[in-house]
Length: 167
Image 1 (spheres, rainbow, N blue to C red):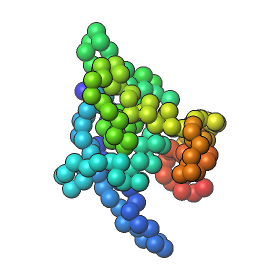
Image 2: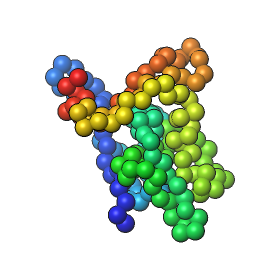
Image 3: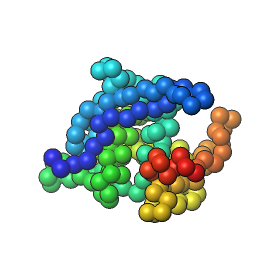
Image 4: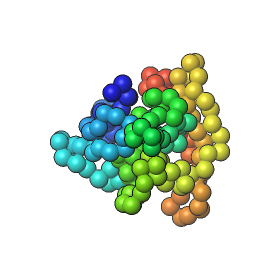
């Protein structure tokens, strides 16, 4: 298909000292179609039940300048922007961490429904674009609606682990 997709991911369950335990997930679907499942040990999971997956989906949606588009003439989902970032957009759609109601949506609306939900919750205040020196992209975001549970502004970072962990 020549379309990039996320097929495996992990989150840290617990970290103590120099050791940590991980949860690994596999992701079905190998095209830009926002259809697929997230599996743990071969069984579907509700991604919203894992704080680490909610955070991962938030980073994938906000540290991203790409999108999915449904081409009605060709009848396929296509990338808008970089392939790597589009694969992350597609992952967010498959994860649906906030249980966005997807029923009744057209394919055009479905393309970015879950990404749009996350972007509706947070406002980008500042973007540090990807650079070869930093090997990362960062966005400073604040909640769109103040609440008791909101933490205020947060910096989300996406990039090469060795560069991020060094800092």
